[in-house]
Length: 384
Image (cartoon, rainbow, N blue to C red; front, side):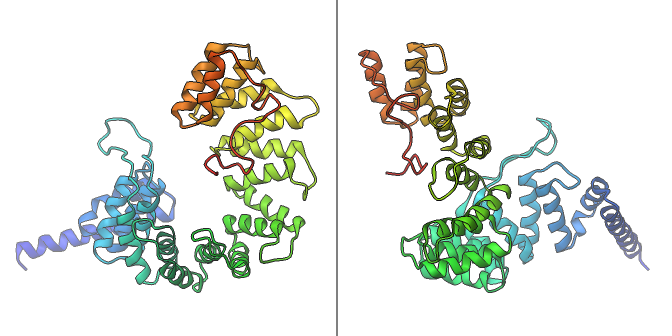
C-alpha cells in the first residue's frame, strides 16, 4: 500500500468516525456538538448531510439561526439534485427571511435572505417537477398571483391539483382559493368549499378561516353561523392573525353572532400586537363607541402605539384626538405633527385635516367624534 493510499484510508476512517459521532450527538440532543462535527466533514458530506446543515442553520438547531448560511448549504445540496433542498430554497426565496440573531461582527454574519421570486420559481419548479407536493403548491401560488412569472390560471390549477391529489393541505387550500375567485375573480363557490373542507380537516388555519367566511355568507354552502364561529375561533387560536381580527369584528358588530365586547377587545388586541393593520383602529372604535362607558384614554394609547409603529391611519386618528383633546391633553402642535406623518404615509384625508387645523375649522369627526374616520368598514385601508 502506498503512502497516499494509507493517508486516504486514515482520512476515510476519520470521516466515518465523525459521521457516527454526528448521529450519536443528534440522537442524544447534543445538537451543537453534532453541527460542529458535521462542519468538520463538510468536504465529504453526503447530499443529506449538506441538507441537514442547511436545516440546522434555518431552524436554529445547534447553531444560531442564519438564513444566509442555510441557503448556502441548501444550494450545495440542490446543485447535486437533492429535491428536499430545492423545496426549501423555493420556500425561502418566495417569502424571504429576516436575519437571525448573533453578535455583530462575528465570523459568520447573520445575513437576511431577500425575497426573490425568480429564484423561487426556479427552485419550486424543479422540486415540483420532482413530485414534491409543497413545492407544487407554492408553484401554483406563483402562477396564480403572477410572482416571478406571468399569471396563468391553467398552470396554477394544474400545480395546485397535483399537490392536492397527493394529500397536501397547502395544495387543497390553493385550489380552494383559486376557485373562490381570490386570484382572478372567477368564482365557483361549491368547488371552493369542497377543497377548503379537505384542507381544514388537515388543520390548515387559512382554510378554516375561509370556510368560516363561506358559512357566514352562504357562498357554496348553507349558512351556518355557529359552525363558522367555531372554525374562525380555531383559526385564531391557531395563530392566524387575520382570523384574530375577523373574530374580533364578529364579536364586535356582526348581527349573525351574539355580541361580546370583551371577546372582541381581546381578539382585536391580539391581532394588533401581531401587526394587523386595521386592528388598532377597530379596537379604538370599540373602546370609544361600543362600551357603556367610553374609554378614550385607552383608545388614545392604542392609537399611539400603532402610530409610533408607522401606521398612517392611526397617525391620522391620533392627530384628531389631539385636536379635540380626546383621551389626551389638547395640543394642536402635536396634532399637526401626526397629520404630517399620516400625509407622508399616503393618507389623503390628512391634507384636509391639516387645512382644517390651520384655519381652525375643526369638524367633529374621527373615532372620538360623530363621523368615524379611518379605513373603510371592511377593515382594508387600501380598499375603495
